[in-house]
Image (cartoon, rainbow, N blue to C red; front, side):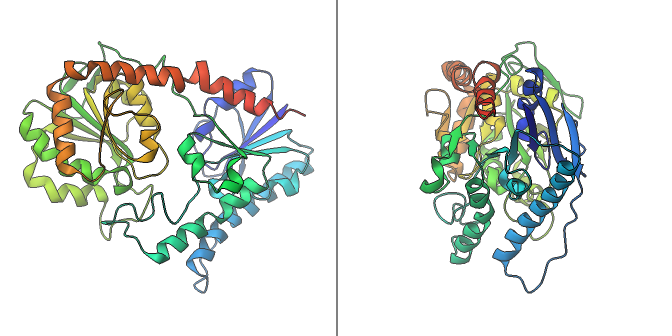
Length: 405
């Protein structure tokens, strides 16, 4: 088959799938934004997308759809050029989040179009209004969220099928669309993400952390409220007071991935300023964004790993920490509860319960033997349900190959 992946930041969720399909003898290409510099495991074609200026007369709802459909038009024109060169894929698999797949059926009506249906924005029951401190419930926000979903629904309607990584994420789609979605997680490489008693991490100040040390980790792509950075940081002073030998490693950038930016500066500095005078900063290590091998080693070193999220897309890092053998203390929000059962393969705490977080993290650091069974069960969960090579990748390959002409 000729298979075309479409993702503005390729390889993204297709990191393992694209080369595996190529290994199996398919002709695999990817179409991505010209500004994407990430290394690709397959041949890459590029489109050049220029963001047009915002029309001040447009409503906020209209601007969002315009942004997504503008990118869709750009991709469709690039696809038309490929068609003119004689290229016709049998299967197109694209991420629907940025509008790239919206018009591809107009160029290649004979191709099967699959979309990665990651999340469907909704006014109630998910991220909107969840955190009243930074995301207060407001009717305009409900309307904005519904408006943001317009292109996602259109993308799935015009596709032959969708794929979501978790049941909860699939459930965010309306009932009329839910039956079009197959649920398969992206997969965790459990051969690489596994406990390693010899693991160690060298921090920027030269300190070496080893497996077995009293290490607490927290990982976000960017440090922000959507992933509970504020709750974690507010819980930290009591943890460090109770555990004078503990070292805390915080991974993440200063930008914003989800939600609004602060009025000034970064969320990292905003919340750090709130607790700075109550923290021993010689034991709190902000390491920015790590290369993947360093991230893997850090998860293997962690005695406890804190993970929080709004009801939103589940982070790979939580399952990777579980696979590496960390005791994961996580927020009792819907996407997490699909994976972690409190007291069995991890510990769940109410997202907003700062004293509860302090107690749970302190206990996780102080009594590693008490939670040994949860660490073992966490890895077993990933092996049984989310293993890349044994479960998820074969299922996703079968999903794609099932649309062969």
